[in-house]
Image 1 (spheres, rainbow, N blue to C red):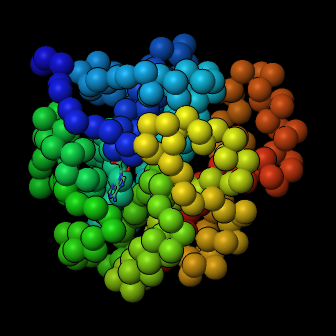
Image 2: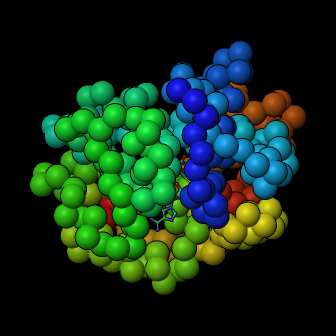
Length: 269
Ligand SMILES: C[S@@+](CC[C@H](N)C(=O)[O-])C[C@H]1O[C@@H](n2cnc3c(N)ncnc32)[C@H](O)[C@@H]1O
């Protein structure tokens, strides 16, 4: 396939960062996961100076993207193994390749993103009855009707790298709508703490400003979500971080300000 021309700017373009992070994970002698599709797709898509400025600002960015993706894989795999009709819905899916990594035994797997991204996916990926693509804004709640009619406990919503781009009242509105429609389903989301503001400028420069920062996970449970698990990204898979970074992270994340810089929350609606 030849190089794909796209109109990606702003927040939709950030999915090229995470795609590249998974592709580059394959260069590591002991990658956390195999992802040949990310390598293939990444080569076909454009890259620019703004994305490069974010990606190469620190070598740790690639590791963070890979660790984050792998941890969501673990959560989704557990969900699939423990439910009879497991449905996974990736909100702001970007060009997630998770279905191809671990989704084979899911009953249904939906990839929701804005039209500009879903059009791209159609060029690269094949929709099937099991694996469907939804072209919509997560804030236009009609997409909820496309979710299969199974008991809510079977549904796992993944909002990986999505919600920090919205304002707090928008996140609250989405959570309330999802709770009223899918009470008992699971929602995995990631949240940025105030320390993350340090790295926010480069995102603003590509028109992808982070808008939602939280002090801790209690601010999220106050929105009506029931907390099942919480992980600090910087404490996950320590073997994947260079030894000195690992040591520094271990010490720093004893302090809540650093621990909460990037949290992954597993919740029930
Ligand atoms: C940082 S990327 C994350 C992509 C993917 N979840 C991953 O981790 O690789 C953010 C994604 O959110 C999507 N997004 C932004 N606003 C959205 C909206 N209103 N509705 C649906 N998706 C949205 C973008 O198009 C982009 O694909």
